Length: 213
Length: 213
DNA sequence: GCACCAAAGTAGACATTGACAACTTAGGTA
DNA sequence: TACCTAAGTTGTCAATGTCTACTTTGGTGC
Image (cartoon, rainbow over all chains, first blue to last red; front, side, top):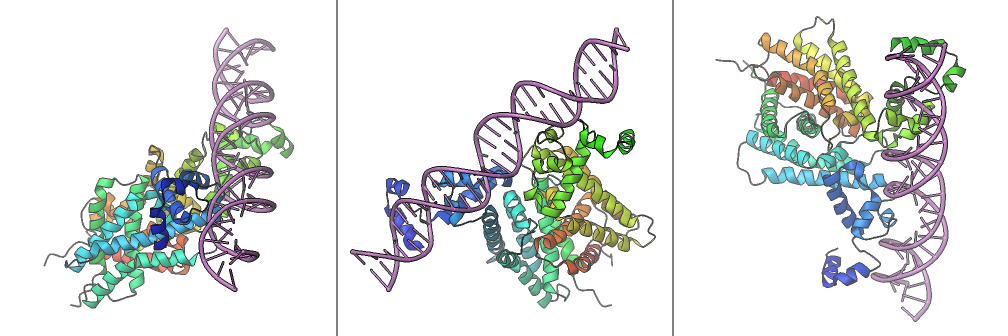
């Protein structure tokens, strides 16, 4: 992969335009697709458009994505991967207390979601097709950082004991739901951060251990 | 409207098939669209298909829905209306306590959402187009029952005082988010009811008034 | 009772798209 | 060096959304 990149950098633009094999078509298509998705939404995303933009023939994408849905699935998968990394970055090297880190992670999630509305739509899309386990796994890895924070909370008895994945799902669902409402027009962007922080605070209170009197 | 229905019932099938003006085309298209949406998903929804199914020419839908998106918007709007009615029905004539009614309303919401995955997708769709205020209003009316329950909770001091719409949004977002995870394949349908009930219980604890010692 | 008119439906056309088949190029390997 | 296969190309097809021009109808004013 990296050799390809170096090779590519050594070529003139002429060569690039002329050469028969693109060499990184799959990656190029994904990047073009993400841009198109961001700028014009899912409905306007066309394989032929992407092929034109990247400079290959209209049928070339078929080698990498036999059907349009395959591209969308791949986009959703990398979306989850990037989301997970975004959340992790938000709480990396933070010595804040647990509540602050959960809040930080949630706000980072919400921002990612509202900055990439069409991508989030793909990630949340209902599947009628046979399940694609890769997407599911990527999604689970995306909210793994939240689960880890919850485990940490349980360890220091700041949170109730109980099935971590379920508690994590509730938090994930809440933040995701709020972001959707922003993308939806049901909630103003300006209010998102505050609302997410409120929701997290409420979540923490609700998930706190019951005091034994 | 009702006269039209009666008139229609008085006609033989022959007459129905022959007559130039369908008479209730908009409604018929919406119903066909909902069925198609449920059975084959959003990607397979085609205006020409619907026209064929209803028995009109391929351009007829254009009179009622100039663009495909207009039909989708209309579907989302009635979806919200039906959702609101479903939630209301779930808690009508119930003498249970507040927590039980909130739980009941939430479970009803979640069931509606998972029984109509493609419709929910439409309702949650991000809008790049200029906002359609009717959908927003329909959506707000859909979760009005939740807001009312929260107001009731505040009145009896079972819930913290505070902006009801924000607290309602948090609850709405949570349930919506959990339903999406089911439609998504991230959460098993069997676990939905229990998880929603857990989430509501946690929500109620988190939104309870802080005890002044 | 009749002419007319706007609403609602029809027919035909067009560009675009996803999908498929058959052919070509070129890079790595026996 | 020959070849084989992955990766691109061209050509084609049916389906779709959208547009324009034409037709049918039911209701309204006179």
